[in-house]
Picture 1: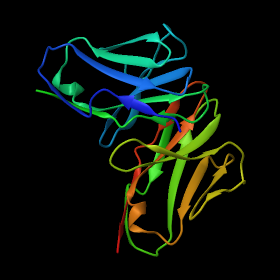
Picture 2 (picture 1 turned 90 degrees about the vertical axis):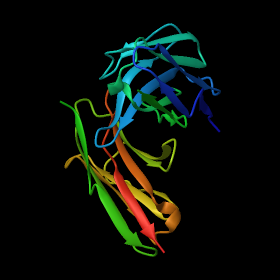
Picture 3 (picture 1 turned 90 degrees about the horizontal axis):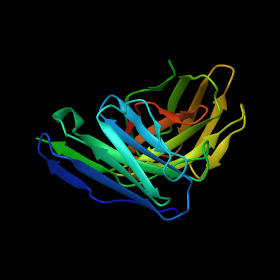
Picture 4 (picture 1 turned 135 degrees about the vertical axis):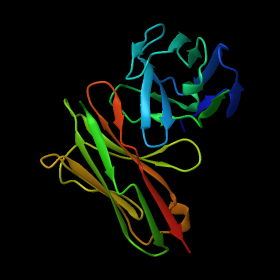
Length: 112
Length: 109
Protein backbone atom coordinates (compact mmCIF):
# COMPACT_ATOMS: atom_id res chain seq x y z
CA UNK A 1 0.00 0.00 0.00
CA UNK A 2 1.11 3.51 -0.79
CA UNK A 3 1.82 5.51 2.30
CA UNK A 4 1.95 9.29 2.28
CA UNK A 5 2.75 10.92 5.58
CA UNK A 6 2.69 14.54 6.64
CA UNK A 7 4.76 15.95 9.45
CA UNK A 8 1.95 17.40 11.55
CA UNK A 9 -1.81 16.89 11.83
CA UNK A 10 -2.40 20.25 13.49
CA UNK A 11 -0.28 23.37 13.50
CA UNK A 12 -0.84 26.84 14.94
CA UNK A 13 1.43 29.68 13.80
CA UNK A 14 1.51 33.43 14.15
CA UNK A 15 1.20 35.92 11.31
CA UNK A 16 4.57 36.55 9.72
CA UNK A 17 6.18 33.28 10.80
CA UNK A 18 7.91 31.02 8.29
CA UNK A 19 6.12 27.67 8.13
CA UNK A 20 7.38 24.35 6.78
CA UNK A 21 5.02 21.51 5.94
CA UNK A 22 6.71 18.22 5.15
CA UNK A 23 5.41 15.31 3.10
CA UNK A 24 7.03 11.92 2.60
CA UNK A 25 5.91 9.05 0.36
CA UNK A 26 7.31 5.54 0.44
CA UNK A 27 6.37 4.18 -3.00
CA UNK A 28 9.03 5.72 -5.19
CA UNK A 29 6.48 7.91 -6.94
CA UNK A 30 7.78 10.44 -9.44
CA UNK A 31 5.11 13.05 -8.86
CA UNK A 32 4.12 14.90 -5.72
CA UNK A 33 1.48 17.55 -5.14
CA UNK A 34 0.42 20.11 -2.55
CA UNK A 35 -3.23 21.15 -2.25
CA UNK A 36 -5.20 23.28 0.12
CA UNK A 37 -8.80 22.43 0.95
CA UNK A 38 -11.30 25.07 2.02
CA UNK A 39 -15.06 24.78 2.57
CA UNK A 40 -17.00 25.56 -0.57
CA UNK A 41 -13.83 25.77 -2.68
CA UNK A 42 -12.74 22.15 -2.77
CA UNK A 43 -9.13 21.10 -3.28
CA UNK A 44 -6.96 23.60 -5.09
CA UNK A 45 -3.50 22.81 -6.40
CA UNK A 46 -0.69 24.96 -5.01
CA UNK A 47 2.41 23.34 -6.54
CA UNK A 48 3.47 20.03 -7.94
CA UNK A 49 6.75 18.33 -8.75
CA UNK A 50 7.39 15.69 -11.40
CA UNK A 51 11.03 15.04 -10.51
CA UNK A 52 13.64 15.87 -7.93
CA UNK A 53 14.43 19.58 -7.93
CA UNK A 54 11.64 20.23 -10.45
CA UNK A 55 8.54 22.18 -9.58
CA UNK A 56 5.53 23.60 -11.36
CA UNK A 57 3.04 26.19 -10.18
CA UNK A 58 -0.50 25.08 -9.67
CA UNK A 59 -3.56 27.27 -9.55
CA UNK A 60 -2.80 29.23 -6.37
CA UNK A 61 1.00 29.44 -5.83
CA UNK A 62 1.09 32.98 -4.44
CA UNK A 63 2.53 33.13 -0.94
CA UNK A 64 3.97 29.61 -1.14
CA UNK A 65 7.16 27.94 -2.28
CA UNK A 66 8.24 24.32 -2.43
CA UNK A 67 11.35 22.22 -2.22
CA UNK A 68 12.06 18.73 -3.48
CA UNK A 69 15.62 17.69 -2.73
CA UNK A 70 14.88 13.97 -2.52
CA UNK A 71 12.41 11.88 -4.48
CA UNK A 72 10.40 10.83 -1.45
CA UNK A 73 10.10 14.24 0.19
CA UNK A 74 8.22 17.35 -0.88
CA UNK A 75 8.09 20.41 1.35
CA UNK A 76 5.67 23.32 1.26
CA UNK A 77 6.96 26.61 2.63
CA UNK A 78 4.96 29.62 3.70
CA UNK A 79 7.55 32.39 3.70
CA UNK A 80 5.48 34.74 5.85
CA UNK A 81 2.26 33.17 7.08
CA UNK A 82 -0.92 35.18 6.83
CA UNK A 83 -4.38 34.57 8.26
CA UNK A 84 -5.80 33.80 4.81
CA UNK A 85 -3.49 30.80 4.67
CA UNK A 86 -5.43 29.13 7.47
CA UNK A 87 -6.56 25.92 5.79
CA UNK A 88 -6.25 22.17 5.49
CA UNK A 89 -3.14 21.25 3.48
CA UNK A 90 -3.05 17.92 1.69
CA UNK A 91 -0.06 16.29 0.07
CA UNK A 92 -0.42 13.64 -2.63
CA UNK A 93 1.77 11.50 -4.85
CA UNK A 94 1.32 9.52 -8.04
CA UNK A 95 3.44 7.11 -10.01
CA UNK A 96 2.97 8.98 -13.28
CA UNK A 97 1.13 12.13 -14.26
CA UNK A 98 -2.42 11.11 -15.10
CA UNK A 99 -2.51 8.21 -12.67
CA UNK A 100 -4.52 8.22 -9.47
CA UNK A 101 -3.08 10.30 -6.68
CA UNK A 102 -2.63 9.02 -3.13
CA UNK A 103 -3.17 11.48 -0.35
CA UNK A 104 -1.63 12.05 3.06
CA UNK A 105 -3.79 12.66 6.15
CA UNK A 106 -3.57 16.43 5.90
CA UNK A 107 -2.24 19.23 8.10
CA UNK A 108 -4.74 21.66 9.54
CA UNK A 109 -2.88 24.95 9.77
CA UNK A 110 -4.23 27.87 11.75
CA UNK A 111 -2.52 31.25 11.41
CA UNK A 112 -3.42 33.72 14.16
CA UNK B 1 -11.74 27.97 -17.46
CA UNK B 2 -11.76 24.31 -16.48
CA UNK B 3 -14.40 23.39 -13.93
CA UNK B 4 -15.95 20.42 -12.20
CA UNK B 5 -19.39 20.71 -10.61
CA UNK B 6 -20.85 18.19 -8.21
CA UNK B 7 -24.44 17.82 -7.12
CA UNK B 8 -26.11 17.70 -4.75
CA UNK B 9 -23.94 19.57 -2.25
CA UNK B 10 -25.25 17.37 0.52
CA UNK B 11 -27.51 14.41 0.96
CA UNK B 12 -29.11 12.81 4.02
CA UNK B 13 -30.47 9.27 3.71
CA UNK B 14 -31.35 6.27 5.84
CA UNK B 15 -29.46 3.01 5.84
CA UNK B 16 -30.52 0.80 2.98
CA UNK B 17 -31.31 3.66 0.61
CA UNK B 18 -29.68 3.94 -2.82
CA UNK B 19 -28.00 7.23 -3.72
CA UNK B 20 -26.72 8.77 -6.94
CA UNK B 21 -24.06 11.44 -6.89
CA UNK B 22 -23.47 13.59 -9.94
CA UNK B 23 -20.38 15.16 -11.45
CA UNK B 24 -20.34 17.34 -14.57
CA UNK B 25 -17.27 18.89 -16.08
CA UNK B 26 -15.91 21.32 -18.63
CA UNK B 27 -12.25 20.58 -19.08
CA UNK B 28 -9.89 20.99 -21.98
CA UNK B 29 -7.69 18.00 -22.78
CA UNK B 30 -9.73 15.51 -20.76
CA UNK B 31 -7.72 12.46 -19.74
CA UNK B 32 -9.76 10.74 -17.02
CA UNK B 33 -12.28 11.24 -14.24
CA UNK B 34 -11.65 10.06 -10.70
CA UNK B 35 -13.83 9.55 -7.64
CA UNK B 36 -12.51 9.79 -4.10
CA UNK B 37 -14.09 9.24 -0.68
CA UNK B 38 -13.02 11.56 2.12
CA UNK B 39 -13.91 10.83 5.71
CA UNK B 40 -12.16 12.80 8.39
CA UNK B 41 -8.75 12.75 6.79
CA UNK B 42 -7.12 11.75 3.51
CA UNK B 43 -9.23 11.27 0.39
CA UNK B 44 -9.10 7.63 -0.63
CA UNK B 45 -9.25 6.59 -4.24
CA UNK B 46 -12.39 4.83 -5.49
CA UNK B 47 -12.47 4.76 -9.29
CA UNK B 48 -10.78 6.08 -12.39
CA UNK B 49 -12.87 6.31 -15.56
CA UNK B 50 -11.51 6.95 -19.01
CA UNK B 51 -14.03 5.44 -21.42
CA UNK B 52 -17.70 6.24 -21.90
CA UNK B 53 -20.34 3.70 -21.01
CA UNK B 54 -18.14 1.24 -19.16
CA UNK B 55 -19.30 0.75 -15.59
CA UNK B 56 -16.74 0.35 -12.87
CA UNK B 57 -17.92 -1.54 -9.82
CA UNK B 58 -16.59 -2.21 -6.36
CA UNK B 59 -18.99 -3.88 -3.97
CA UNK B 60 -22.00 -1.61 -3.49
CA UNK B 61 -20.35 1.28 -5.34
CA UNK B 62 -20.44 1.75 -9.09
CA UNK B 63 -19.65 4.56 -11.48
CA UNK B 64 -20.03 5.37 -15.14
CA UNK B 65 -18.79 8.11 -17.44
CA UNK B 66 -20.54 9.85 -20.35
CA UNK B 67 -17.94 11.73 -22.38
CA UNK B 68 -20.48 13.05 -24.83
CA UNK B 69 -22.62 14.72 -22.17
CA UNK B 70 -19.58 15.43 -19.95
CA UNK B 71 -20.73 13.86 -16.71
CA UNK B 72 -20.29 10.94 -14.41
CA UNK B 73 -22.42 9.38 -11.70
CA UNK B 74 -21.47 7.47 -8.60
CA UNK B 75 -24.08 5.06 -7.29
CA UNK B 76 -24.13 3.58 -3.82
CA UNK B 77 -26.69 0.86 -3.18
CA UNK B 78 -27.89 -0.39 0.23
CA UNK B 79 -26.12 2.47 1.99
CA UNK B 80 -24.54 1.93 5.41
CA UNK B 81 -23.51 4.42 8.09
CA UNK B 82 -19.91 3.78 7.09
CA UNK B 83 -20.65 5.34 3.72
CA UNK B 84 -21.03 8.73 5.42
CA UNK B 85 -18.31 10.92 3.90
CA UNK B 86 -17.59 13.62 1.38
CA UNK B 87 -17.35 12.22 -2.13
CA UNK B 88 -15.00 14.10 -4.41
CA UNK B 89 -14.98 14.06 -8.18
CA UNK B 90 -11.85 15.14 -10.03
CA UNK B 91 -10.99 15.40 -13.70
CA UNK B 92 -7.50 14.97 -15.08
CA UNK B 93 -6.42 17.27 -17.83
CA UNK B 94 -2.91 17.18 -19.27
CA UNK B 95 -1.02 17.28 -16.02
CA UNK B 96 -3.22 17.97 -13.04
CA UNK B 97 -6.44 17.11 -11.26
CA UNK B 98 -9.30 19.61 -11.09
CA UNK B 99 -11.58 18.89 -8.17
CA UNK B 100 -15.22 19.57 -7.57
CA UNK B 101 -16.30 20.83 -4.17
CA UNK B 102 -17.70 17.46 -3.16
CA UNK B 103 -21.00 15.95 -2.08
CA UNK B 104 -21.47 15.39 1.65
CA UNK B 105 -23.38 12.17 2.27
CA UNK B 106 -24.82 11.40 5.69
CA UNK B 107 -26.35 7.99 6.28
CA UNK B 108 -28.46 7.55 9.42
CA UNK B 109 -29.42 4.21 10.96
